[in-house]
Length: 326
Image (tube, rainbow, N blue to C red; front, side, top):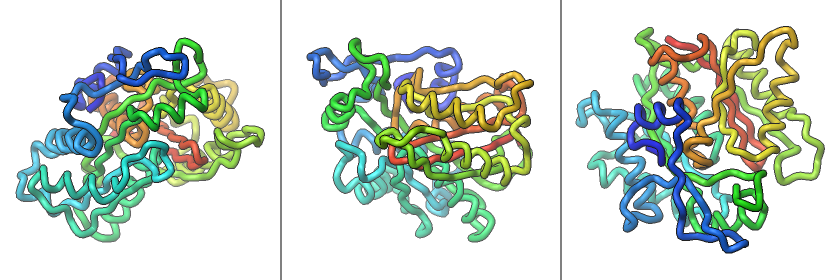
């Protein structure tokens, strides 16, 4: 669920067509101009936790529509949300979001459920946990849920003060957004699905807030780890889906990391960045990237059989995922 669509098919179609829906917020930048954002069109009375709960609940109901409701409680649920250091983060979110979500769904999540509060790399972390639960703890399936918003006064003030918002006076910035979704994951069945073949993590010490020269060591290492775990080469990647949202730093990082691995005699694969349609939606952005890659394979419009997804957060955490169609 994003500003571009209330369902996965609608959002993925809008992202494929590059059709966005930014609107004016009630907040102004430091020049006094209204801040534009990709806002989910929900009733104005829904604010704070209730807004994120509504996004997550509707996404879960769409994701699990083919699973009898009495079976929902057996699913471990991994809830991905904003990192604790995010300016303007809702207080007590780790407790209030899962608790309210369970009340609205009238279910009790499995005891193995957990909250993953690491922001933009959260979905990759959740996929790693889900894999352990499926193969070690013997859970048949795991539900990954993600919901986040950057359309909050304190959050926008912080990024505006740091000159990181896209405004008429600043082209080197992102447009804030919000959204959420759910991914039901399990063992591969060969039934037209996205198969996560490798996950890699690393730390970038020359992160966006540092004064160190950027060499993209962290993202390069994350790519290498994901490719090694998947048992494939960089040449097997036919397109990329990532969380690039408009800031020059992250475009430069992505280009440097790719250039350190790619062979010069090959054509660069396509790069898809859903944020140009849905905005920078924090922890929700990576989950939408996974859904976009899945939709491309299921819909038959993927440029090839291998996809590399990668995500970077402001504190330096980097994550890469290599996936193939099942």
